[in-house]
Length: 148
Image 1: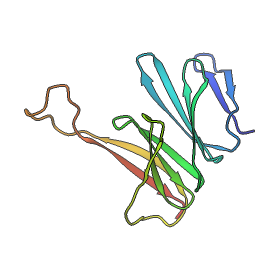
Image 2: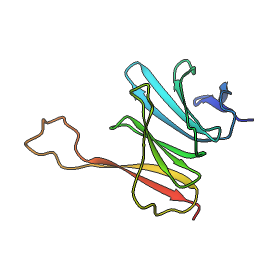
Image 3: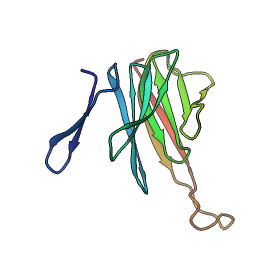
Image 4: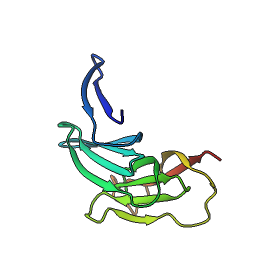
């Protein structure tokens, strides 16, 4: 019952079912790469899984030890995952190292209930003459929604 169904868009037929999660999947994100792509999934079994988009094999599993994961978003510029949790925490996970968990986002939380939704907003800045021409400017802003 806690699986992902991958569909081929052109035909709409089931392509493969991914059954590694043992709890409800709460979020799916993706990253394009030169050699294919990566899918990220987060579930209420407190795992974040990284999947090879071509083979659909799980290539990495990160386990949250404390609070239930209820939302997730991928930030491409920073190459990190942000997760929302049942206790209203936000956590940042690095995808570039073995020690995946970076830190809990600190500060006064505006939410008192479960984080139910996350979205990334790409804020584009103006390119200045100090930066090389193809250097991206701006930043990524994470917006969190909650049940409160």
